[in-house]
Length: 172
Image 1 (cartoon, helix red, strand yellow):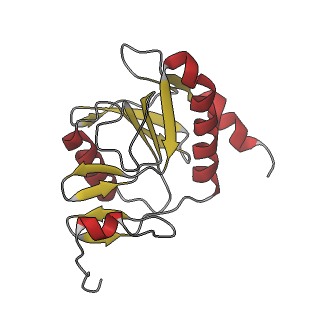
Image 2 (image 1 turned 90 degrees about the vertical axis):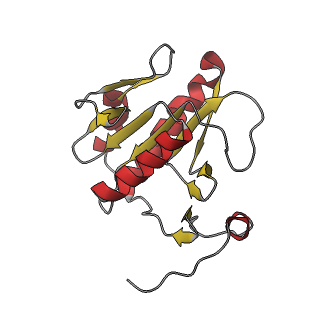
């Protein structure tokens, strides 16, 4: 890996990347953009949450910049926030962050992102694995056992992954 060019967070925040990139301690980092199943799950989850926004008093977004520290911006696959005006770059912890594994993701990269979310104060982090067709939630420093029903404790926010994964089996 070659030397990385360092830029300021202000420069990063005023630059558009296609596809968007994360910013970690002065370094602009490429993200793994999802392959078909990753992108399809992201679409299906966004549709699920959109259909429940009014009922649950939330709003969601895909690939939303999230300033996790003064020097780092992460871009989770989905975020869920309380309804109301939001800045272009989220600076308050969302109610929920969802990461969908991509075949190119690494364990250490995932753990770095999750650590940043937790440092920001995100209390609900979900991980969805399209290959093994399971979900997990993060509590403190450990992932839950595999499950098909993901929930945000003390809220109506949930998803049954069977309802999402069944769409992956349809012919393309």
